Picture 1 (cartoon, rainbow, N blue to C red):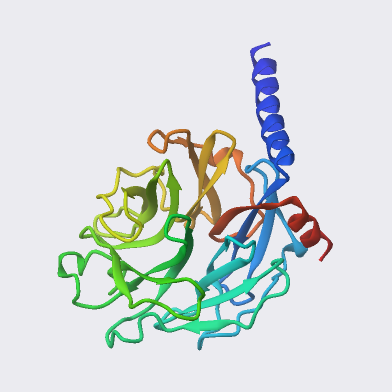
Picture 2: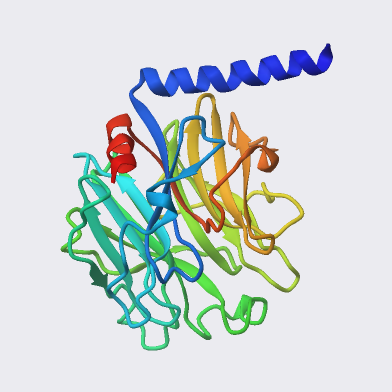
Length: 312
């Protein structure tokens, strides 16, 4: 009887989440890459935030064309204020710029653009895991990413993988044509990567990966600020479990914030959820992603966007 009651409660919970999304004419999408990112952008959809199904038979929607390596890793897709989708991604393991393109429907994309955000730094090694976020307060976009500049931050110089010792940097833009100068975004004395932003109750919430190898951290943490570009707090304790995690992406599903991430040493995706962004529950056993999914971005779209993608 107890097992039956639990099953009924689980069914009702998923049912009402689906009803809520349908009533709001919304669905959930997930942008991701596979392998090394050589074949480009993949998309999956979900009605409950738990089970994700690949679109286009799990084939790429967009082939990478910029950068010497021509990769499309860490694809971050957001919907801008006019409904246009904007995407940034990692183009290479060793270059000093990132990729950018936009689309009205996630099928037809603008010409891909290489943005040389770190070309001014002679010693910069890379530009990894870029993220784009539209700030409703300032009505502009922030793009931020992680870069290693050897010797710049000696306090954590020998605690990462090889010579990697990342810090986060950012630029601001309103049109993806003109960009502000590059500035330091997040530095609290440790190797950091895979940042992603939300604004909850007027507070900016930054999810990030502590990339420290010695001693091993490799987990997801949270920092907050009342300002978009500065004064982020020291990170919280890890919100992920006893495994290595990377590529966090948050999504509001019902009353929960779910943060998905890549359990990259286990070749599968994981997730945690919270109602208050402080107390977290691991729900990795409840989520299902297409085989071969690597990390990316979860975002909300109108149902008709998904229906059009299904017909593609």
